[in-house]
Length: 362
Ligand code: FNR
Image 1: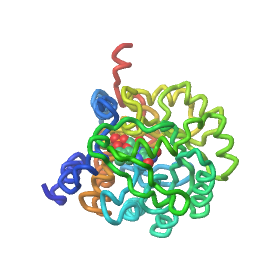
Image 2 (image 1 turned 180 degrees about the vertical axis):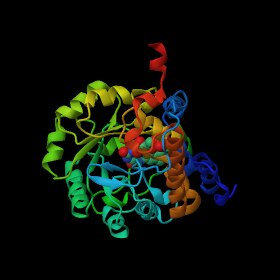
Image 3 (image 1 turned 135 degrees about the vertical axis):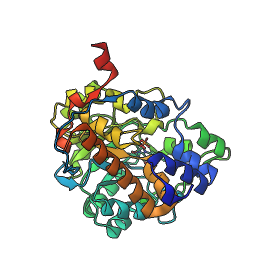
Image 4 (image 1 turned 60 degrees about the vertical axis):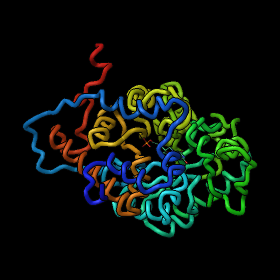
């Protein structure tokens, strides 16, 4: 399989597997424990059926949308994922250039292999910064201030990682995460690990498991940027996120890498959207591999989706061009889906264009 023969996003996974050392491929592709949630994220999209409307004028399809005041070319954004240099030597710089070329938003991972400043200097894409909060809170303050200074437009707090999920492939492969670029001079990645992966040991030394809802006020007090909360899966937490003043919610189970047996994100989207009640944007990630998946998420109330692994697979296979191709394929598929479903604009995509298991029960 060659990159120019690729016709769907899933095929990039095959190329990435060919291109990458097994240890890195497994790190990117894998999930926690039984990988139940990892699989469900994809499978639950497949249970949702589309209900097209015919004889709608679809000679012009408008994919563009607006997220927190920023216009993007389609409701497809780049999820924060760690250490892109393990996939491609240009790392996050290539990903960011692809985001700019596709006119979409990239969320840079805290655990990136390029610094917030390097990524900011390399492209003029709208960028958000994803934050983990370490026990040493001054590291969060440092990173948030650097992100704000370098023109990032929002902070995305990942809330599902008080400790690291148990990823057995990484343990078996003795996967070692390199020094994180954003932390250079702040702390060293050296965590004693004679047997096996340093991932878990590193995370347990660093991540602050005491982080809680009260701390959102602290986070908001150290920045002027809007704070989105990533990792919400229930209506209860969606309500709490509204109470603490989150500027947006990302429905996510971390791509099945944290708590296994959490629900597929698409299956809880609607209840989260109802709890939020249009007050702030709700985004979704996990298992988005087709334009029809994007359409389904929008029909169930998401403003946009984020794409994680497919971006890494594109990057591993073909660098910036690979990431561009992944985004373009999803956009093209979404555009065709909208035409065939009778939705000339993103706003026209409604709840009545999909049928879920819940509808069948009623
Ligand atoms: C992630 N994800 C993630 N999330 C986050 O908030 N900070 C991070 O550093 C990372 N790192 C990371 C690395 C890798 C290799 C993967 C696959 C994922 C989770 C990510 O943001 C997103 O929630 C999922 O990737 C979405 O699922 P899909 O699109 O990969 O199915």
